[in-house]
Image 1: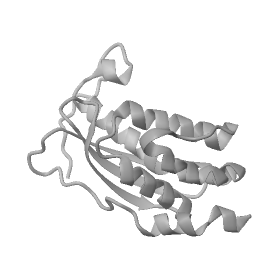
Image 2 (image 1 turned 90 degrees about the vertical axis):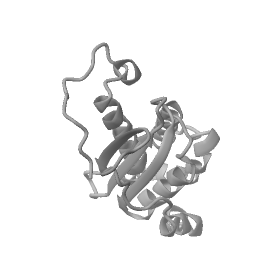
Image 3 (image 1 turned 60 degrees about the vertical axis):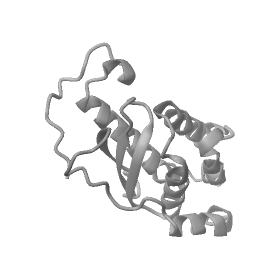
Image 4 (image 1 turned 180 degrees about the vertical axis):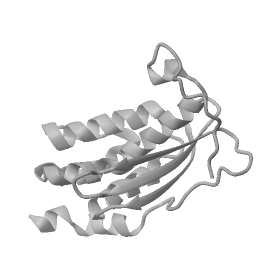
Length: 172
């Protein structure tokens, strides 16, 4: 069973992480920058993601990820990285929800641009690995929330009023 979990395809994805690193927000940027983190408490896998939302507030314009995770977390991050630029926030949320359903409830997994995440369906049998498999996509959505918080888009966040966070964006 462990051979299924760490297949050659999963190990290959983990070894070839696209958009590895961090974005530089120190100068002018065209869009809305955001940074998000996610940690899997059980194993300590961690993802830090920087995104740049297009001025429409919906489309990912640029992306970078710093992943400190097991091969499963890295493989999921690789699939995410292959398709995230040009995707929309609703697409990413749908992929996260489908991924959760696949891991926890026997769902089929994401469709469309993030269909490659279905490769990780084998992780469903290993609940201790679910959180590490989800760190990159959760960190990406945390980065989206960070970008939106700074630009006070309560309607996009699904909130009735803007967050109280009035700080100035100071990334670097």
